[in-house]
Picture 1 (tube, rainbow, N blue to C red):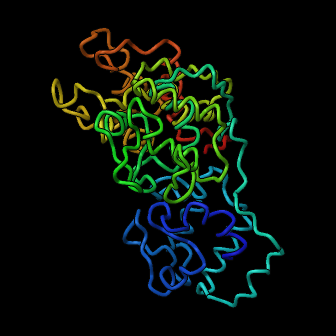
Picture 2 (picture 1 turned 180 degrees about the vertical axis):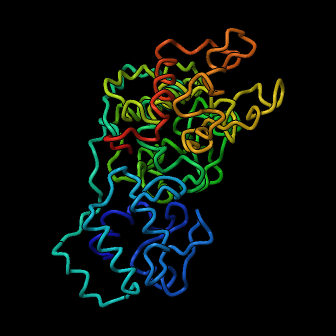
Length: 373
């Protein structure tokens, strides 16, 4: 099980000296995980592996995408394990999670276990779409939509981002304005405005510093497939120009021809229409007006990508009833002092149509018959 499933698909992120989220699934962790009953960091009341009970094992929840998990389904590449592999892991837990013998490692017939999980090519983001690097406007909105969302925030996003580091759109003030420091090399900022060579994010994307300095942990993205050098250059140009915020329209500058998420899904709606709202409506708002002109998030409303259940609660969004949904009322209000996004141009008709159609169709997390990352 370790050699045939965990090593090929999990330990690329959850291994080494600095495993993501502090959780290693390497072969030497059996005692910590099984014998000593390691608890989940996302749902602390649950064991990661509860011998004899797959339904009470958080690891099984994560690989099957149980709706009650925190963060993203594993593996974080967005490509689920095959059902056969899930069945093997489930049976292992059901049988009491036995250690077995070293010879079991060869039982899967793999003589050289792959070190990189299968994924899409680096120029094709998970879920589809195409990117023209030369067309990306090098601003926060440009790199966020065209690079970070596609290759980074599957792990570094949500309520429990791996390594505690979120790269979601609402993190601009934390990362850039407030100069968030690296957790691996604490003397370095992740983004040193005006200086890509002194920015740890560039070291991680390139796999080393400008003079060959070693990074801590592994090169990012953790899939093991580096970013297209042209996309890395866009990140460098953004930092070199002072890491500007830019405007929301920059998000469309990369030339995406196919939506990253299925049309009509929550993530499609959020990416296409609601992303700008997280400047204020997030747990760590990045609007410079927050705390000066108004408190954030306004009225406690969080419109981040990971808060689907908090948004579709019958008040902010009432499935099937745009006319009775607070979200729809606020983005269409005729009074600019009340209309959202506050203090910014109104949403385009296309963005409004996306929201209206989504709510009218029941505000689904994922439309019936679609597969959502």
